Every structure is written in C-alpha cells, then in structure tokens.
Amino acid sequence: MMNWIFLIIGGLFEAAFAVSLERMSESTGRTAWLWFFSFLTSVSISMFLLYKAISGPNAIPVGTGYAVWGGIGAVFTVLTGIVFLGESTAFWRIFFLCTLVISIVGLNLVSK
Image 1 (spheres, rainbow, N blue to C red):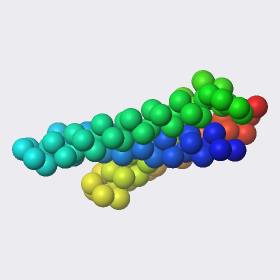
Image 2 (image 1 turned 180 degrees about the horizontal axis):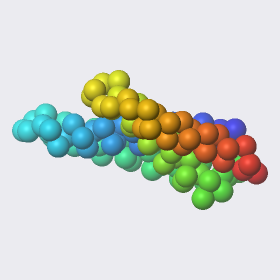
Image 3 (image 1 turned 60 degrees about the vertical axis):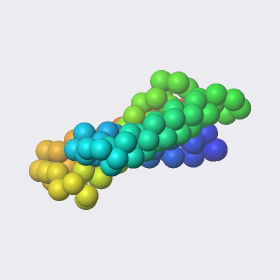
C-alpha cells in the first residue's frame, strides 16, 4: 500500500515540475530562476518517489508504476492548466482525460 502512496505523490510532483517548466518559460530574471529551482526540486522528489514505488518490499511492477506515475502527472497537469491557466475544456479533451483516468484505475486493479 505504501508503494502506491509513493507513486501517487510522485505523480503529483510530476505535475508540479511540468507546471514549473511552463511558468519558467514565461518568466525572466529572478522569477525564472525560482521556477527553475521549483522544477529541479519537483523532478527530484518525483523521480525519488517513483524509485521508491518500484523497489523494495511490495514493489509495483516497473511498467505499471511508470504508466500510472506518468498518467497521474498528465491528468493533474491538464487539470492545473484548466483551473489556473485558463486552458480549454473542450469535450474531446475532457473525454480523453477521463479515458486516461479509467486506464490508470484499470492498471491499478490488474497489478499484482
């Protein structure tokens, strides 16, 4: 169970590093550097938690772990874009986001 918690939190930090990259690209000077350090911190934590989830006792299989980690990151990156950055909520975008969530849940259910 703890490995899944590591994986979920790691996926959230993946979304944080993606948003940090986007914000860094729109910033200059000191603000850009702060977003850069936010990116480095988030990517480090995210990768470490992915590593913890796929290793040790009760390890999640690497293929499942990576897919779920990436999916969580993708879902929360899109949701952050919609809520905070005014990105599109077009039907097909939300539809495919939902299919991604269903796939993440499915992988969780069929994993050992």
